[in-house]
Length: 518
Image 1 (tube, rainbow, N blue to C red):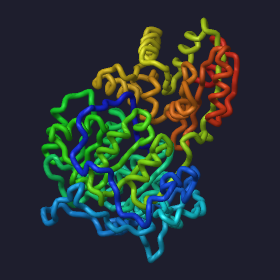
Image 2: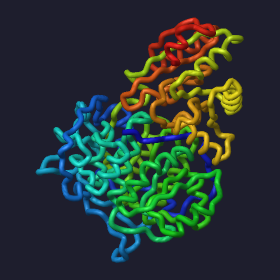
Image 3: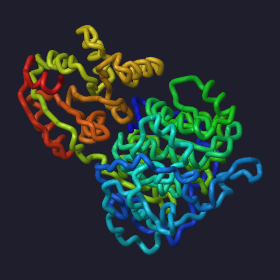
Image 4: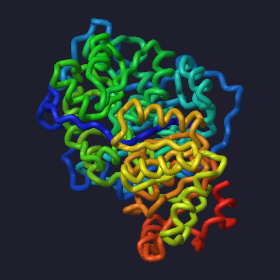
């Protein structure tokens, strides 16, 4: 099962802050704020569930349990006109238990080759983030509490056995708890938040301009990819979705909001623009998801994200997924999540065991020919350039050499970006030349090779670029091209990333190129 994510550049609007409570969100907690905060404690390894990558396929004979949903505190809220509106400054926090969904009186959560780390003592003045006791033997979505009406679209998408982040977090999120999920891009996070989002909203409809579900993410490509995963699940529940991002006109987005769309999948800047225009109100949001939160921090979106969160009701469920907890993410989680269940499958910088790393030392005058040879293999591959100009230039050079290549970078119009990505996804083009900013959201199946046309600027960029291959247990190869004078730079880069690579001096026609590149 694969969820899809894409990236390049995102549009960040500059409109006024959304309407809502204005003041920073403060909820009643057990005791004072404490010094570290629950999410900050998580960043230090406090009260986390660490999962391995191995999974045991479940039986195909499982019968879904009724509607499949675990208890949700006060239960699912129905918006049928019998309840008063919940403004951002009126609602009170719904009660929540300290565990996930209860079955036969025992808090349980699915172990998929999991070990549970002992919870460290939390400050006495702070309600700690908590983990959930494993649920032995559950290896299907039905056993995890996924409603029966969502099982068919899951199966149709190829999602049969839950990935670790899904098996880990679904009992908590379906049970109504806030969730802080940490795992690398491609670990299955989209389905992990899409299922509880849809299940929570099922059974009611939204009013014009007042959606009930919100997904915030950093880029246009990722928004479109996430909607492709969420839309069939939402349709099975009788819900509607729309995407909101810059670079396109306001008309279609405003029309969808006016019609009463249920789930909005949005980049923060354009969403704030729509709020400023009066086209969108957040006072009836029941579930808010933050996807790729660390990338939103990289792009400078956190102030807007905080404004948006303050405009949503205080008793709404929040699900935050991030590859790391740095760059203010721990503080964000501490401020806006209440007693979150914390789930982690791996660190963002953990090397993937199915990925081979190679460094090719090349001469400057031979580099172009070597790039053409690496691009001319039979399989799907992504070449990463540092700049938009470099991506455009190399894509054009490869096309002139008879290689089907497309580019993906921030200077492309939205239509061109969609066409190029569709051509690469369908196999019409075997080579995608992309910039760094595109790396975080690209998800296309069966990418067998990633080539860094020059060493990335820092080790996290290396890890995120390389993560476009060897996804979901598949094998993949990563090749970095370096000039002799870049040896020290690359050595430090790999050391910081925790990568051991094979280094070789390569010239055009070298057998190593055909062996690794196909």
